[in-house]
Structures are given as C-alpha cells and as structure tokens.
Image 1 (tube, rainbow, N blue to C red):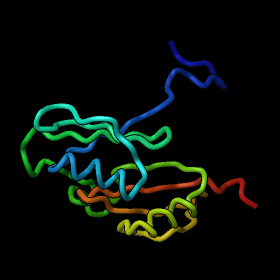
Image 2: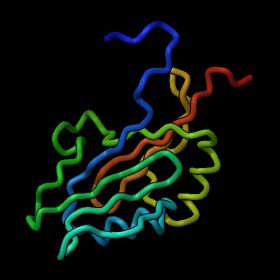
Image 3: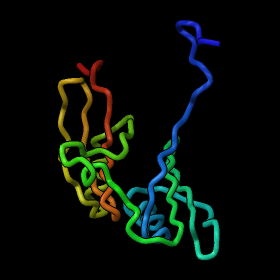
Image 4: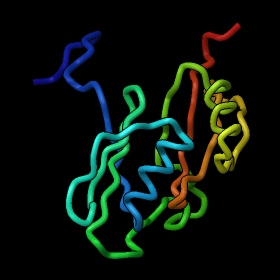
Length: 138
C-alpha cells in the first residue's frame, strides 16, 4: 500500500555494509578516529561487526578472503562517496576528526545544493562524506 502524502512512513534508518580485509582493524579505526562504538565481533575468527554512533551504523564483513573491498572511487574514479552521512554540526565533526588525525580528503565547503560537506578516507579506502543542511542558514 503506498504511503499517504505527509506521512513519515515506516522507514527510519539505513546501515551501510562494507567488505573489509581486516575486520578488527576497521572497527577499532572507526572507534578511535570517528567516535563509533561496538559491542562485539561475530565469528571465530571475527567475520562481522556493527559499529554505531548516534543513529548511524556501519557493518563490516569479511569472509576470510582478502581483496574483496571495492570503494566506489576505485570502481568509478569520478565518483567518490561510499557513504553520505548527515549530521547537525558538520564544523564540530570536522574539528573532532581532524584533531584525531583522520585523513581528510575534502575540506568543509558549501555546495550548490545547500549542504555543507567534508570528506574523509577510512583505513580501507572508503570515502565518507559528512554533511549538514544549510538551506535554512542565515
């Protein structure tokens, strides 16, 4: 049944799943540099973990094989993002990540579509874009 105009609908979250070579390294990187947390690893050796910060989740998976990662910019060089994360205060997030030594690949800038964005590259080569809506900004 289609949703009626004005309804919020049933969807409320999305999680991104990345294939990674080193699951533990990835989870610890997101914890230490990006402020995410996680409760446990699944499998022995670990093959799955969920990291979370606020309403944002990243799932990391590894079936034991190496070389399965495919960041978008490797598959298609003109496209950079692997995840687009909306936030409330992009400047504070940028300062937090920069202070922790995150690899910033694009400094904060206002876009023509009224978002302020910056980009980081994670330890696996995935590009994350963090963005704040500035359309209502004075």
